[in-house]
Image 1: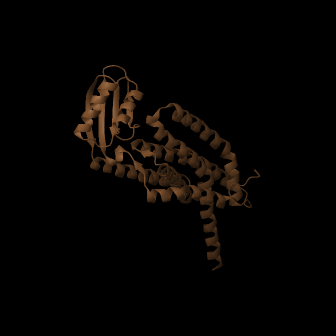
Image 2: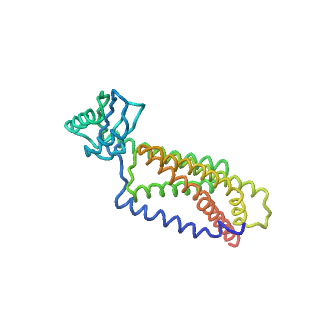
Image 3: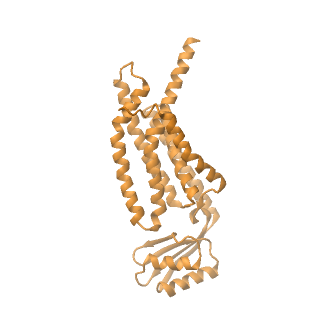
Length: 294
């Protein structure tokens, strides 16, 4: 245990800021590349008479210049859902005609527009879901551990959310409804890893000798849980990398968000949550000593 995680916490703060600040600047200057789920657009669902590959459908959509060719979802052998920017009647007719000509005979199942009202509600619901999740996590950790550890866990979650949002803004990767699901999953993963570490800290606090400094105790706890944290994150990362490479373009954005979030979550559990908790503990003790002297 020669490497001391906690004593180097100022370095970890600088590393986090170096990743988060460019993302925040990008969010302010160019924002997120919002998909049809948030901005509104058209949704076309078709059923081909014969099995058709997603590659054929994507080529047709790309040739029509209707926006991202990644907004195509295949269901079964013959059903496809195509999400594009809002189409006029002429553009919709042209798309259907091109699909029939270049991909095969089909039946049109749906051709609807996703208006700004629905997309606005989705944005509000997504933000509300994130706020509710964070609030429940704070309550749970405050009851199981203590309020300061709950606050530290929320700081780590905010760290992970900002990292993912910043990366998607910098790279201008499309954000859709699946992205919201990825963010909620990332929050769950991050808090799970943080709880494991805090649980070990609590156990060591019960058994600790009075002379042991809080920094030494937390550093010992981090070393005791480090192997488990590394094994967990590597297992998840291997699966996500395989999905990203082999799962097709439809789920790539979702998987990429998960990949960034899982790595950030593992980092923040070790290098953000615990150091932030220590900072609050040390300030509390310093304030108590000053009050006693007064």
